[in-house]
Image 1 (cartoon, rainbow, N blue to C red):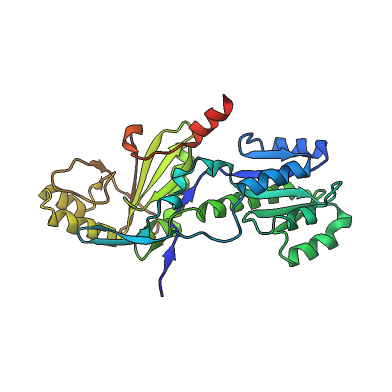
Image 2: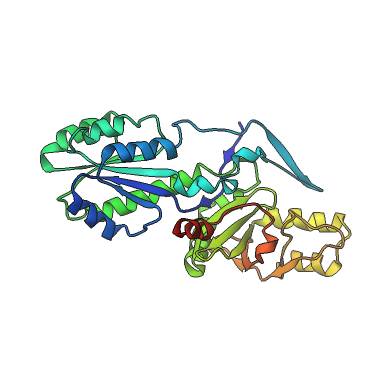
Length: 320
């Protein structure tokens, strides 16, 4: 059986809030202040128009073809269709990851509203009053809504915050490359994901993308500054060492790889090439995982080598 995985991807995505009550919508604005990707509508039809233009269909799209990325000694199967590369789509920040709608609105109720977008792949939240709960439960059981919350519940805002965080993570995770076998596997391990979260928090990272051609994670902070995160488990160290040996690489590098003294970053390549220059990172242990290490470093914008729009650039364009 083929074990396809999706290594980590995250970027700011859009949440749509719909409520004809201006006062409650203002309260939501204060609780969710991200003015670029949190959109608030008092008119349901305007919200529907936006959602239908910016939400995905409720079916996963796969690449037209997959291919093998090969290095000497390494064979990695991944999707390679250019259309599947989320980094190449500036519209990714406008994609709707979740919709939060009030149950009781004139013209169209919340359940009807969410039913009309059931074919779209976004999380759906219904805000209710106490009297509406029976209908909300039926809508939940029918799969029309993913979560219903009573506005009067003391913890409703916190529950909504946690739900939307998970919804956006799922949305982004479904956008990444599919990989097969060991390619990207190290990044999917919960221990590595925890380290990624720590780096993201410490370095102010707002978007990151696993790159199959290099088997690293390309990151950008809020100002659009690029960086690279790399993680190797034991099999990665062995494969990289074998490639260095096959390429006639420096004996010092082979020794440093064997002793885990240095973690070379071969960006923008996957592995060592004879005579190439590379960065030497200090390996840091991934807690709870023997012989697994990570490294992180900033790179120059000119080294990214991709035609992309960062969140910082997209946000600046919207401010013009």
